[in-house]
Amino acid sequence: MSGEFRVRELVLGIEGLALLRNAVDGDEAFLRERVEDIRRFAFAEPGEEKLPDGGATVSELDAARGYEAWSAVYDSLPSSYIEVEEPVVGRILDGLAPGVALDAACGTGRQTRTLVGRGHRVIGVDQSPHMLEKAREHSPQADLRVGHLERLPLDDDSVDLAVCSLAMTHLPDVTPGVAELARVVRPGGRIVVTDLHPFVISLQGQCLFVSGAEELAFVRNHVHLLSHYLGAFAAAGLRVRACHEPLFNGRLAPGGYEEAVGDAARAAWDGLPIVVVWDVEVPAGPVGPSVPAVPARDGGF
Image 1 (cartoon, rainbow, N blue to C red):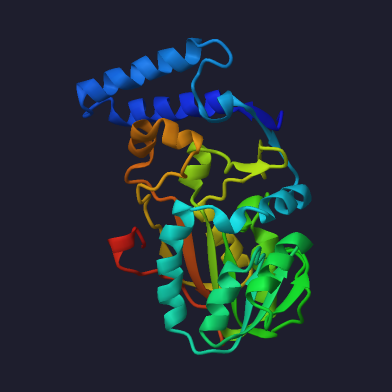
Image 2 (image 1 turned 30 degrees about the horizontal axis):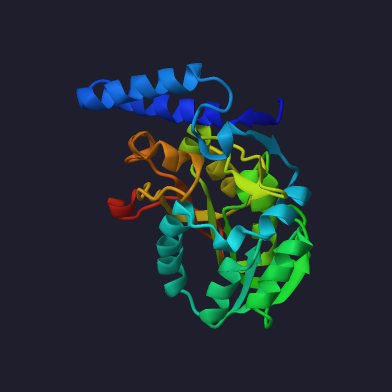
């Protein structure tokens, strides 16, 4: 893997996906626009694409460097992923009594703030000191610790609830992360894990952000099929209460490359789940069959 690509390649992919998904039933004018856009972007000379950042090269950063750079802008970035994730997580948390809660891979403390506001005593863990500095500004009462998702700096059975939001995507395998969450949550406790949906990572790939002197970068996302999660939960002795798959809400990042081809981008992602939210419990007794059940209004099962 080169760890590098260009914005033009992403735009061509979006246009092609929109064309593919609408080829059978799409409006003819819309389809012609997609073909013309593909021709224009594919054959334009460098600098003539009329794309954000001039179709700049996007480079991969490792987690440590990426989170350091991302921490400066993370809280200011509107995100459709967060917008569709938060209401689902909020409904789950609304049904839980305050206790000791872990925000695993807490980043700048988005869920830490949510948990503090719900009366929990919160421990936040993240591998990036720069992210933790931001989290500490927002939630000085939280116990914030440097640590890795696969090696949490907590004792066994030490928290009542663990939340891990949009972080497992950066692990090549979810099994170690799930096992650590299961280790630190007491019997009878709950675990809420959210991740980018495997659909969106398979189709879109990476989430871009501005690093340094206006350079575009990404930290690699990995595809985790729902079956991978089910296997990890089973291996850790956990019981799945529900799985939710909230759908794309039409929001594109302002000023980003997708907004430059907004009609195609919205058509490409329309009706697709972009996040998966798992509601899991640590059984107080022997584990029985896991039968997820949740109303389908948000794409859950």
